[in-house]
Amino acid sequence: MKTKRNFIKDNIIIKSKQDIIPFLDDLKKREINSVEDLKKWWADKSETEAFLEENMAWRYIKMSCNTADEKLVESFNFFVSEIEPIVSEYSDVLDKRLINSEFFNILDTKKYEVAKKKIKRSIELFRKKNIDLFAKLQQKEREFSSISGAMTVTYKGEEMTLQKAGNFLKDVDRNVRKEVFELIQERRFKDNEKLDNLLSELIQLRHKVAQNTDFDNYRDYMHSALKRFDYTIDDCISFHNSIKTEVLPIIDKINIGRKSKLGYDNLKPYDTSVDADLKPALKPFKDGDELIDKAIEVFTKVRPKYGEYLKIMKKNSYLDLNSRKGKSPGGYNYPLYESNIPFIFMNATGNQRDLETMMHEGGHAIHSFLSSDLELVDFKELPSEVAELASMSMELISSEYWDVFYPDNEELKRAKRTHLEGVISVLPWIATIDKFQHQLYLNPDHTAEERKEMWNTIAKEFDSSVIDWSAYEKYYSTLWQRQMHIFEVPFYYIEYGIAQLGAVAIWRNFKNNPQKALDNYENALKLGYSVSIPEIYKAAGIDFNFSKEYISELMNFVEVELAKL
Image (cartoon, rainbow, N blue to C red; front, side):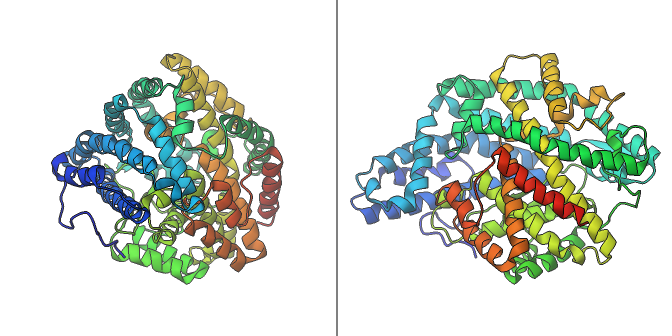
């Protein structure tokens, strides 16, 4: 499974930049006298990138699994501050060697077209004066995980993570939900100023990066840096507007029905997660071991080899699923280009959302396995619009087999209904976060108070009018602070919305012809990023489209499926 090295020594341990400079120097100075020489050189460059990326990946994974361990934090920071800057400098030199080679344009145009565009864009954006800024940013960005990972509340004598406390928001007793909601929000608010200050520092550093790269603002810089070749900033703004007109009315309709069923005069924010019929919270599994075993069973039912992929991860301990104090919040699938086994990290506490997260990250894992044979890292490094298509599609496809978690048919229907309502409701939140970030970076010198006003205006634009936040205004004004992407991976979020639409389209195809839809799904995932995003979506049997009309068509389909439940 692990890729055999042909260039980097097998026993190398990175203790200083001197451990990697000989390999980088070889690539910098080696003669290239033919197309075959260039292909071999590019393969060695790719092997070096895979080695370095996985080395940093393990440092990040270990740190996020235990944010309280200073040695793990130091190990990650060492790589960011000592290794990445020298790698970044060499990368620009090597990229220029590649495109300036007389043999570069002789390479198969179709096969290398996207890789060439990515490399040229990297060269366009490289500025030596940004290297230290990027190192400083990476260290500063990780402070969010440390701050969030330390957040706990004590309820009924038990100290617990916010993720675990969130399970009580599904309690049928409204007083319990209210009490726990207020505990969680107050704990978050306790670090409100700390997170505000952190973002202010990040915004200034990022604005400097944009200015150094000859951009007026960081938004425009990031659109270019994220290599969004297939859509524009104006397309993002159109997406915001389409979500508001086509999705928000559906959410209001769902919330009106919820309010009516519950029989409340006001639908409060702590009433949105409980079952509308006041049935006890769904409990699809008891712990991480049961979660992975049942996930393997579900994936095997989708396609046997998908189950085998998860078995490989379990056997090799490439999973950390349970929530605990000191662990970074959230969840991710980290592709590892040398091991060719991805790592899944999450904070499971036994609820339905955890099941959805497992299916989501499992979709990413399937993608990693299916694209592992691609010859270059340049082909494996995915744009989020493609990566999230794989994961979100698997959430919906796998739901056809959730009887593994829910043998009771009524509970199964509840789980599917909860998930589909989430598919709809996440779209306005995505639009909110993306539009908020546009405003943050178009106005980088704003104050904390102006930021609060900015958030309130945008959030209310996309929020359901049915939910009553009165008495909780101070919490509402800081809801953005729970979104990791704003701190750690700015502007990486609208891709979820684009991919969610694609996932619904794939699921619609699956409902009509399961095997053909899965064949198309696999064909798309095997491409990695060797062709354009529209071509990948076409291979998946769907359109790369987020127009108002297309959004309306897909949401109508989801509404019909919801009505069946």
